[in-house]
Amino acid sequence: MTLIMSKLKEFSESRLLPILTVISLVFTVLVYLLMRPIEVELTTQTAYGVIDLEFAWNVEQMETILSSWGDELIAKEINAVLLDFGFLVVYSLSLTGVTLLLTKLGAFTSLTNLGYYFAILPFIAAGFDFIENVNLLLVLSSPSSFPSFAPLLASICAALKFGLIIITIIFWFGGILYSLVQRIV
Image (cartoon, rainbow, N blue to C red; front, side):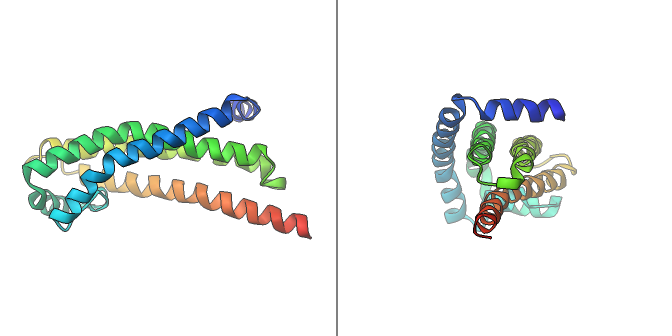
């Protein structure tokens, strides 16, 4: 873990950090914009969207979602999940980049070392997203005979992914607020 921390500290001093962060933010938005029309189509044609799929939790709920979508929408959602493999790379780079930039700029004052630990969380979230996507593809590619573990595993991974992303963003705002209070006091 100390090797990872030292590499993150070293990279936070690199001139590439702001450039890579901006590029990854741009690609995050672009990939999101590519996936968004599929979500809109799912939710306007049925009662279920991708979040419902990610949090189906069990075979019965998954079957309900898939039967409401039909073959055409399932095929479109497969494309969205495939795009999500690229999305998880760029959003994790974006979140890590912002965390490292805020840490480097001293936004967290006495929490600086903690900032480097929080910079790892988006990559862990991306790992859970990867496992989630694999399980969703198992379900979507064989809607009538998918493995019974896939909905639960996908939902657990989705919950962990979103939790880590939310914790990272809360750290940004909490750290900045803490630093502001420390500077005033």
